[in-house]
Length: 377
Ligand code: SDX
Image 1: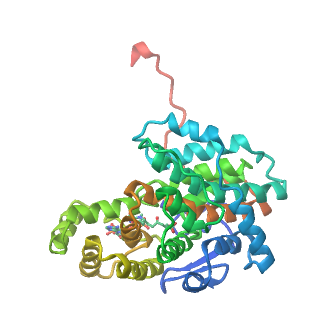
Image 2: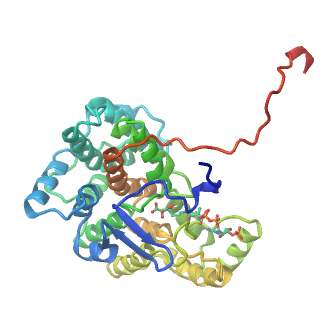
């Protein structure tokens, strides 16, 4: 039953899912039917991760157990720390994360994905350990010891602590936790789809997540948040925004942090992230990048008039991380430590009615060509 070829599978449903939904025309994102604005205002990243994986908000007892399970599995084996110490210090943190996650699977049983109980513990370990791996590399690469996690700290709080050895303020903790909620899931994005294809082969969850990390790294996907801050730094001043945009577009280059396959209005996550920027600045002063970003959004509205190109989730997120002192090449790993919840939710959903992903192609080559011996070519 041939289907029309759609580049990038644009608009082609690749799965039936009840995990999240995006209304690209009205700028609405829901996780298991709950608006992200509600979740940012009333939930936490850990509770949201539970909602994504298991389909319902946890009871108090379920949340206590979930929090305890995640907290007690944050540590990583010393051999993974030793492995990171052998890597080149200029290695990109996304490459280190992908390598460490693939290695993680060697320490734990995870191959038999039909074992529901084991799948739970694989999901717990991956959600719990990715922040520890990211924070460990941030310190090991510059010759500092890695800081073990603290069981008395919350999820976002502990991540910032492992980066700096300082317990962050409640405001920073809340803002980062909201950022993690906003990055946790987004229907059939490239990294989730990559993970689902890997999951459909019945590969183990560590391999599934390692494949998703690879897809997320690209600048057209999760890698954009790092590119946005570098772009804002390069522009340097709101007065130079127009010239920068004109020059980029004249060369048919993409403006990082703008545009989206589904949203044809401003990404609702960008709106919330902008609000988080302003809350953060009240405590620790304005970021010079923010004025450039706001001017860029204003000018882009004119430049992209009618094309449905607006700021996406990556446009304001890096300004927050930069203000918190998180290094720019750690921005996409921060995206990954949140999105692993979405990847695992789709992994579990895929396994319930698995079918190997194996699409067709439209062959554009020749047939029946003769083999020419090399001396005659
Ligand atoms: C994420 O899928 C998800 O859900 C992803 C994500 C998630 O949560 O998982 O939301 C996270 O990856 C957000 C996107 C981060 N990437 C960037 O910011 C990179 C810059 N953005 C573009 O490369 C682009 O917008 C894409 C890749 C994100 C989407 O591109 P599409 O859907 O393939 O759209 P397109 O390339 O066909 O563009 C449609 C038109 C084109 O104009 P024409 O050539 O038809 O005249 O819009 C233009 C494009 O030129 N356009 C842009 C643009 N994005 C679209 N022009 C300049 N700069 C841009 N950023």
